[in-house]
Amino acid sequence: MGELLLKVTDLSIVFGGLRAVSGFSCELSQGELTGLIGPNGAGKTTVFNMLSGIYAPTSGEINYWDRRGKAHNAVTMSPASLNHAGIARTFQNIRLFGNMTVEDNVRIALHAQRVEKPLDVLFRLKRFRIDETHMIEKTDELLSLFKIDNKKYELAKNLPYGEQRKLEIARALASNPALLLLDEPAAGMNPQETEELMKLIAFIRKEFHLTILLIEHDMRLVMGICERIMVLDYGRTIASGAPEAIQKDPAVIKAYLGEANGDFQS
Image (cartoon, rainbow, N blue to C red; front, side, top):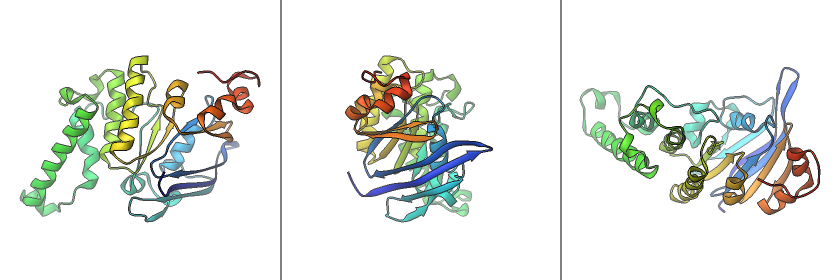
């Protein structure tokens, strides 16, 4: 593993009288692949919403170091600023631009990296043409990687569910993140699609030099690819460790099954 990329300290958020997340802390190193699991309503997506700037925490700190080693106080940053700094995410409920083509869903994520000025665009100068060529090549590369390049001109809403999931990950990668947050990437996929997704996540982590934090209910996927797993229950971290240890942790077994006996099963 590389240097420290993300440090979260005592993160909490309260909605009215409900404390959705309480004292969540974690550290992610460069290149790490970590799972965040827990029963429904445990606060997992709420953690993602704070890490990506959608929710402002009630208390706690989020410190992030980008690819250049520059430190960011993520609590004070907007979702767009965090994305520019290198944090990208997918959503539990797919949020594609359904009435745009598959190709344009990826291209829109590439615009933040464009370097041309308004005059370059107006007069179609060299810098504009270079940027256009780069966007076309990068889009084709990502769609090919996810094996949906043959559908680049179709509307995103017309893709099968599993391919919409792939497109959302491709769009996130287009923003050139250092940290990728995957919120239930295997939701709605059949076993074969999930198996392919496991291999794909492992590949993009290596190919794009990513740190990945994922939420997932498919325990076979989580146990199969994550090096470390954190477990939330009622907004609190109840366990953290290697997959083998998490499977046998009495607190985890109780959170999922209601009793502290036997191994945790998928």
